[in-house]
Image (cartoon, one colour):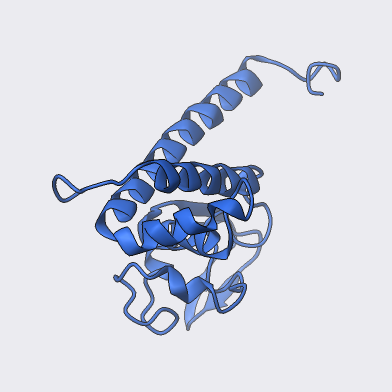
Length: 173
């Protein structure tokens, strides 16, 4: 679409390449973390494998496993530039200030997630978490445009991994 509109230039192409490379590394890392947890928690892997017949993407526990992996191990951050002055938690943030929001820290808040450092996919089976509780692909707008694709690929990968293999950890990490 950009090419048809005549909007393609070196900067745009560079940004696209950067997004693809970043996404490739992010998916590799997410798959690696899921493999680690599948090896450390064989009962979870068996449960994912048992859902394999539900669909090509697994079932509710498979989705919960992916979400819990994103919650426990994603280290993304969001950068936003304030358009207006804001007072947050008693602190003045002047207009034009660049703020960095760390998702890992918010996903390990003990008030929102009991035992926040324990891997527990069950916590995502109770219902859809709100954006104030779980935001692996961004807060409000804009969000990562490929977040849905990333979770779908993760479910398929995890389903096939757990259905076809019995993993054993060989070391920590």
